[in-house]
Image (tube, rainbow, N blue to C red; front, side, top):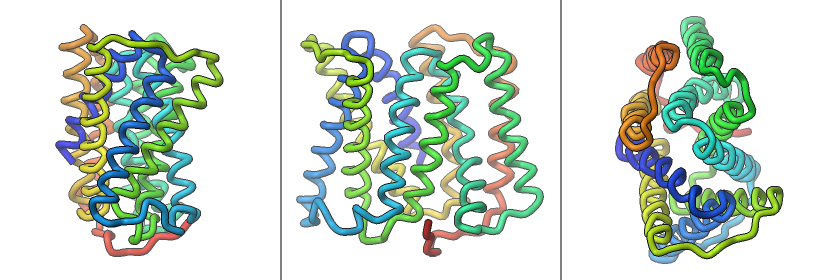
Length: 283
């Protein structure tokens, strides 16, 4: 999980750098295409079929939809607002996953955990409102991305065991590719040629993105959720550090207070959560 968070922070920085030189939709399409090809090769190397009937199951379709929404709006927000702000908003994802698991999968969530969930959402408000951007569309993009990733994680927990991590990676990156195509059509942007430096960044983005994605899926599907999820918060160190060191961003007191509230709420929830990795979930 820690390696995944480090990789995702590097991925965020690369998306921002690449989107300066080529259209955002093109960057997402190339990222998705490269990732899908890599995971397809992994599937073939493991002698797994690229398509099995479980791909069309309801949990998988829901997962791909939320993957598309999460990747599109989260990545778009990276190009429009500070990376540190986007990173801190994303930290509410585990809290929403717990709330979703309680409402959808009927997992037991006591009164104290519900209090922690509402406190975590209060932390998001602290992060959003006092930034000066208010609830501008750009900040809302990051919130939509967070909601998309929460839905994706819930879909991963409900996905059939027959779907390997390689299948989830393959179809996850196909969703990224579709997100790039849809955005390009909506924006009416034509694809352009790019320099060798941009190509290098794109290749790094694909390799780091695939490694991070696989690490995340491995952690969520094989580890106890109560143990591995708190390590998501290491992304704050990596993401905020990248924003400050690479892009000269500055943290406000409201961002710090909001992030502390979210992290404390999340750690409280997962500190006493009952492991449920062997439970079957259904939408």
